[in-house]
Length: 496
Image (tube, rainbow, N blue to C red; front, side):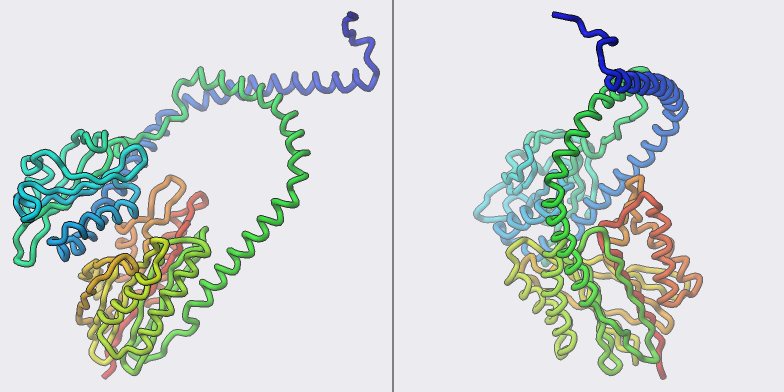
């Protein structure tokens, strides 16, 4: 077999090989220089990055614990309402676990001999293991465990020390709160569990093992050169599929466009006019089509207004949004019954058609503009803030359960507004907007900007502009708001 000699190649082939050799030589030099620069920059930035990652991780842990506390405290009313129904509480535990993926487990532990048919100890426990949600009864004497003993003694929510769970096969901590019967006696403890693996999460430091990383960069760039040939071939093959993919993408874009149009058209287009009222609202769609909405109806001196959030996305969100908003609008237009009856009607409507475990949070109010009396009813929605004078306070709103989950008797509440008071209503998209460091805007930051607005005497339009500016500043160029950013401000001025 004859050996391949450079001189035997055609001039065209020799030219191509010379060009390729030149490109490879330049690439090698650039690769070596880049590896050196990368190694130097790694050493310079390592300490700063590690400190920054620790701060980000601490904020993420605080957010996770705050979220678990919200789930627990929002569930207390539902469990206390049905303490005597073992079947109901077991099913409610399963439902809450399906809706809150950050939880490792959830349990309710009754006082010994509470049920006649469950002699001794009775504590149903729902937990995650191997990616599945499981249900069991606690088989040991939990009355001696701090998760039960501490809240039963103190009467308040208590965090436990880390411990090992044989059921979930994981190390975890628990937040537990006592439950009271109708007589006001503590008869059970409700607890949620968080995995220590989540709380101890530390971002992999991309700047460790410097020398090995530099070598890997060099190797990967050489391999990348070889991959160019495969990429070119893959591009040729992909062109054949481009037309099909393009048509599919166009269909998706068209569907999302229809959904976005439906969401915008379902909102009220004009604000009610009244000399004792000033109202503004805004909805900035997120990166996904979701189900936020707001509405208001003025009937004489009575203003009915609401804000809601349908817990799903895409086309399904718009369908659920249309049903919820239609039921809400018809109830507000009729308004010949208490807010509780309106809320019960909307809940029964959604429960009756709910086939895909969709639900909606809603906060509805009625403001008498001649007296300042505010009636309100909540269905699992974040409580609005009241800006009065130069201070802000959240409304004392009982959480109740969201619409569409289960039958529920909602409770109406009342507060007296003073002339000049402003109510600020919002959805969770505001506080959960995440910046490039994966840090949410948070209720703490929202309250800070609301306090500044109250001290500055902002009207509703200026208030919403202030909050929107603060959120956009928090998001920066790398942040994203996947959920809608929805808020409403209602200012009351007594007319004599």
